[in-house]
Length: 441
Image (cartoon, rainbow, N blue to C red):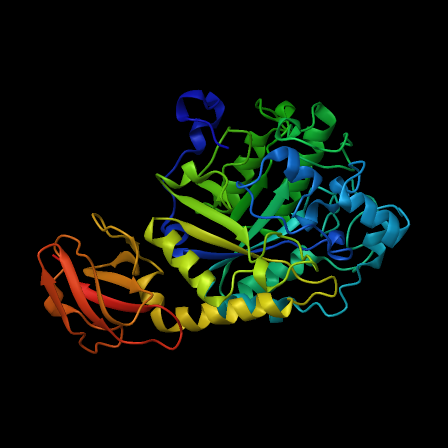
């Protein structure tokens, strides 16, 4: 996570700037984890990150995209599964099996846009080190030379921009189990970026290539950045950021670059929640417990439509963005439960999007869970998002005028203020929580 300004290397101070309005207004992004791990698509769905201690987490890792690591942990259920189901074959065989025969970038991005997403962030290289473009120094270990035999990053970039959305690029700089081999990770203490100049230059050249080819609006680093690349120089992270901001003056980067720089902070499922307290931030999570497609996940492990809507509204009401992940199958389509969740989210956003997109938290508002109520502000309107219908009562923010209560289409809503309490007759909504709007001073 990002360091405080007082401890940030001085060379990186020049990158500090206000977070652009497009990112603060965007509210919803779609994360895409897709790789050779989508072929076995196997992980134990034990729960959400941040709710399980790391000694259990790594041995029973619910992240299918960590399959390469988990099968190397002796005695783990994943190792047993890999031996029985695949005869212990090399992980890279999955790259050749990954043919992406049904992949249509425009069709996928259309689903994201319909859900209301304003930006899309596909993985370009995850911890397994397989690049989804013909990255320098990867030889044939990329999706252009093998497997899909396509520039998947380029396909996502083109389709995303054609849909009018912002394009982001995820890159794992802090782990690469192929270019910088290590013992299997079994605890958080082992999450240390590779040392040495060679890997630092390798990662530098990859991200520079992504910037020059695809001009991303957002760089999403993960795990950290090799320490050898922190100091200024031609192959440093400072050089990467100089190139990035020159290509994208209103671009943003997240906080997972070993603390040297961040435009915004991140949380992941229930981990890193302290980063949600101030400034620009983003919560990321999968629709299930895994980012990569996991065939073991059932309905009980997934966010359904109502759950996704509540999560999205809650994050926005507290000032954050939601980066909601999908994990396509190896063939390149969304599993039906994930597609259904996006459709439900999109149906709600189509009717109530003005209450979330471009909004800000309503100062002084108190969230409620019984009934479920979250507040946002759009211009001179206070928006109460209420997951209930009929007569409801909840705390009234200062300045909210009950006489102005109305639905998003302007239909008046019966409401009165009784001291510090609002009493409303909330209409039932077919797409999820209702939105009642009020004029404020």
